[in-house]
Length: 298
Image (tube, rainbow, N blue to C red):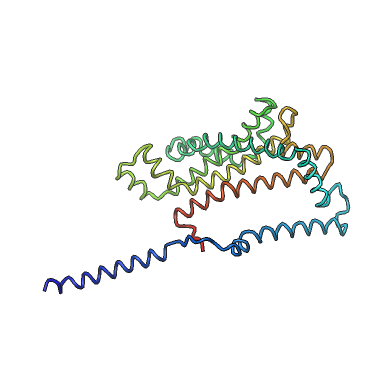
């Protein structure tokens, strides 16, 4: 009799276990290797097609003399020759490294300052009321506005470059973290306090992980501000002792009325910006989304 009574319960348990297994199977992300053909069609072919289309239109504007003044629009081959000559002379990597090293180091300092500042603004009401609007205002201020005072305060040196980067990037990083913290569900905070995660422990284990998507968005925007701030500083504050970065290369092309050099600098600035995003921020963003079940690979 007892065995007869437990049979329905056992069947219900089996049904629930089967249901849970089915749900788990639906949520499981297949980790098999993606075929190269699919990767080529989805990831490689679209940007290559876009680049080729731009080159075709560019060459057409020159070939059909829609823009017949080479001092205004050089042919793609002319720009390529300038890039090749800079490479053969051993100068191309120097241009890139001068700017990239400054940009990454300045962004690292901005990260060290902007992260605790953002946490302070997000968690302390008085601090938010006092400097929250100032951070928002600084974020909307054009980076080029900081170059003249930075030159006057610090002179024509690398310290001036880093100061401009910090003033451009710190507000974006701090505001991104504030936005991420504001979007943390209150239930997470209450659960953390119940489990004893208060103070710095709660910030480290609850607030920061939950605010990570907004924080990563702030980092991405902060890098964009860092790069633009650096280019503005290199264009305006040119000095031989500072070396020739990409911004200085752009200004040299303008001074020489050499549009091929100008386009060379523009393309290198664009390529570096895209490369940093693809190599650092896009993988970081995908990891954050995938860890939260928001990015499922088909």
